[in-house]
Image (cartoon, rainbow over all chains, first blue to last red):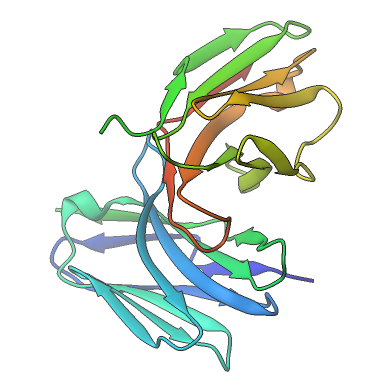
Length: 113
Length: 115
């Protein structure tokens, strides 16, 4: 069964600290993996997208990694800011003709001063 | 660039009433998606249109839900009759190409409360 699981469910960190969010998937055949940031009361916004051949992709203080062999991805946030408080959602697309999308339930990050 | 526009932003209705949610995608985008988001289940894809044609409606929960896209700049999601378990945030998103390959741009969502 195609699934996407994220951990932890929630996380609280001090401003300025780093953190890493995890995404494990069983989707096959794999096409790409995206990380979205969703601020409270807003729609998700894409942070990164990685295909099978990409191991790392950065977007400012956000760095995503992908290990297609172990089917794991992580999102690392460096020098966190209060504005990083949001939900982070991992989405995996398969390579079937339908290009189905599989969503994780997200990690809720709270950055405190 | 106005982005994806959704209306209304908030809707409160009584059980049994008809609810219509509206979406205007980004101009030039040819794919449109309707999602539902709840705390328990996260984001769920309800239906996906490409070039105004429904491609995948397997996520539509039941016959009470229907969606239309009469032209490239407008789509509706209708719930009739509504039930309390339909309470959720409904997002519309659009993209410049096929699902899975192109970045999706989400609207601000409609928060639906059915009492």
